[in-house]
Image (cartoon, rainbow, N blue to C red; front, side, top):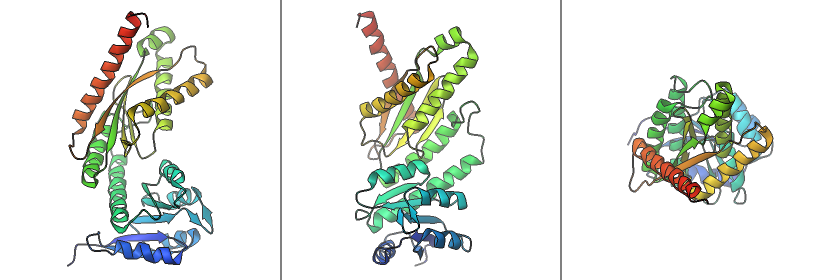
Length: 301
């Protein structure tokens, strides 16, 4: 039965046996129909991309002529419009995470990626890439920080949550408020307040992955949709954000320290909630944290 155009996949894999495994896995019943074109090196891939249009690239991070993140960078430079899914060796999951930061849409660990998972990763990468193309054509970023604005955040987050629900993937929505921002404006002036907001944006970018959605949704309020981050506890996430802020403060020496409060809500694909509901839940969590800290101060803690 014809289910429409076949997904054109460029597989960059130097291991002949594993290339056959991938091709056969994608051909399993129930997966989206794919046409796999395989090359064994990055140079072959770059040449092939100049001759043929592909919907997605599946890249082995360990190639004879390319190791690690170099391949992603060169592919993104050559064809920024084509999403990349990377395959890592069993002991290279950390490199997989770094590849997503570099610009890959997803990563899978060899030996754990069956046909169903790989097919899903390909479809998810294509859908995410299409959404990002739409956003690039709209005015959904704010000028000061370069982050998404509220409209951009809600638009993209809604689409990501739909995909997460279908794929059974969890996510975290983080609502961030800059502590004492009014005092910074009053004491140091609004230009310094703007610099503080830009600094917070930079810290958030460093804390979260490139594939996560980071936005400034209000004056001193930020929001992040952390894709597939539910395995990391909220406290661990807050600790990472706090470490990055401390490192920034130690370097900046502005005459004041930047601190934030982060409220977190979990997206459960079994009981899916919308963006507005998650933002409200994260906002309540943030308010509760601020109220508890205020009580501690009043109590002399």
